[in-house]
Image (cartoon, rainbow, N blue to C red; front, side):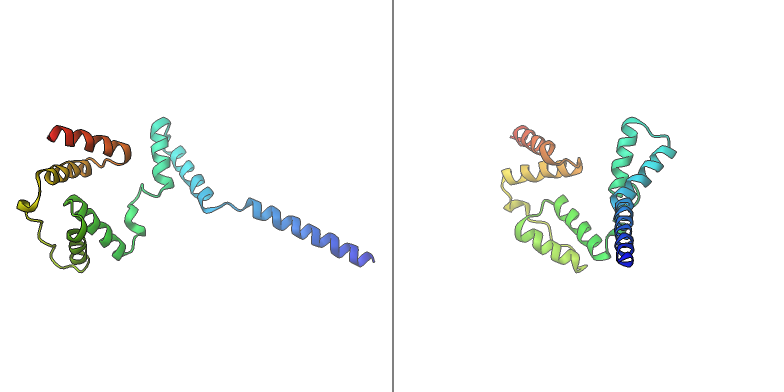
Length: 151
């Protein structure tokens, strides 16, 4: 009987120790937060500078963000960026992306005489929005104003 109690007591202690160890193990995000925090402190960053640094650090964008991309992913990203800059859509975009990913010379630009004035306005405004790296509501507002001004 005494042996059973001792075994049960030891099993309970082992479970408690395991739970405590599991609770103390930091997640990858917590470790990243600690590391970024230490870096920000060592650089004596405060206020908005610290917030910006922490945001970039936690996203791993402060140092060559494309290191984690495979060569194929990087090529896809580059081709996608080029297609967006050229305002390609639909079949033209598919053809361009296919050629770009195969390292074939880029598909010829669409002929301007097949583009309506409204489409050309859209392309011009879109190019400006991409150049300014606008996204979300800022992009919508810009596009709206750009299209109205271009009229």
